[in-house]
Image (cartoon, rainbow, N blue to C red):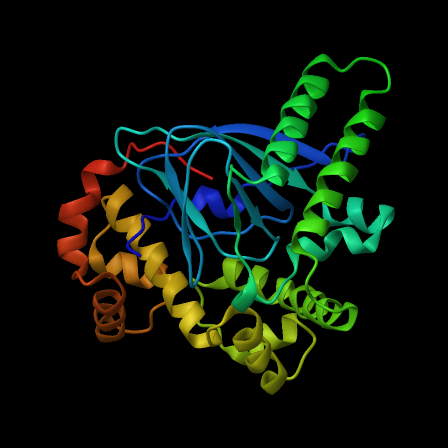
Length: 296
């Protein structure tokens, strides 16, 4: 997918409130998706109006009112509204430790075999309607903050995640714990790449950040992300270049140097392979869109 990166999205930290363990954020998706990113929190999107689309590594989902989208805290994703169909949503962010402290099994819906998983729960399913109502009630509780609102919000969160657990309950205990452990190990590697992609880093550096051997880190990227470390890093750098080409006046040389490419030839080759445009063509096509609102 051709996307425009907004670097701020990488650093967005949806801090959950200590009294509730959640953050609930109304957000209207922009019409231009930005860099696939991930949050430190687990994420549930509840579509209120309009029509949009979520993109993941190997899948995309159209969403309409009442639909839910489930995202874990290392999964790269992006989203947008369709032109003329502005997509407004409530995004529920949950700190994983909130669920771990309550019941470790409540994490199961967020850590899955991606080959058998659908991120979208359609609005016409009873579970989507139940969760949507609970999210709306949670929004009201968070807004009014009456006595014991924190406890009530936590009880709603427990109800929501229990409904998700019932909906997604397909994997054995051993299988999902194994998947969760792999995601946990990978998080520090992803964080390292997002902080150091503009430097001349290699797999050994990332493996060290993960406290793993290079061989194990290489296999972990393939298992969890469905792509190799080098592929992931290259795409990340190209997407960083897309942002700079569309939102700054930097020269092409300055762009590739700031994005970690070691030569102009590798930059031109990888940029064209991923975007189907040369850097100059991309800049001319998208630079006028730099005022676009930041989506989630």
